[in-house]
Image (cartoon, helix red, strand yellow):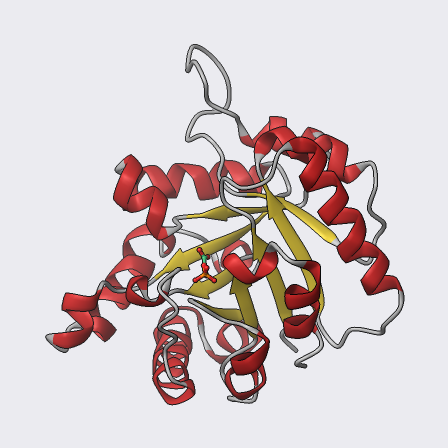
Length: 250
Ligand code: PEP
């Protein structure tokens, strides 16, 4: 069966010292509970190796991005093999901020997904519509196209290694959460899109996380929906107490 997962996305926040302290705080808090979900933190590249050195196996570690090339003359980029060599096991790909500010397209994302998988990193692949698409009623088609374009060249075996994260762009960092019914409608749709391509077993086993202003006060209602398998958490992952409030919502 699919896993429940709560993953933090620190984005471009915390100095190295602050990040290491936060990771330790989350890990210490996790040691005191028996979480009913896998817990992951995705941190800036600079923090990966030092954070890997202070956490234990109760806490998964991921990057927030990786390059669309394996190595070479790409100044400033960080490759999937480099990420994997830090001890990280996950990588967020296709976050709306990367699509919006850094021009990431389905074509570049395909390369990133392939490189992540080739280096034993589990992609946390983000999809989601903007407000205009929600309001004009095209949101289901938009998300379907994002999945088809970037992921449907994968074999069923490789697709099964992914985690998906539905993040309505209008809900990210805005304080405006999708209602649990809006989330459930989209998550059920995503599962059907997967089923139509890869079959029921793959669809049922794919973890689909919700992201967008998820916090301790709304996590329980969201996670109670049958097709919501956890959350990708931005702002609320930067305070151990808030993040743990979401982890323990399961
Ligand atoms: C995110 O950026 O992945 C996210 C969900 O952010 P926030 O929780 O701050 O809306």
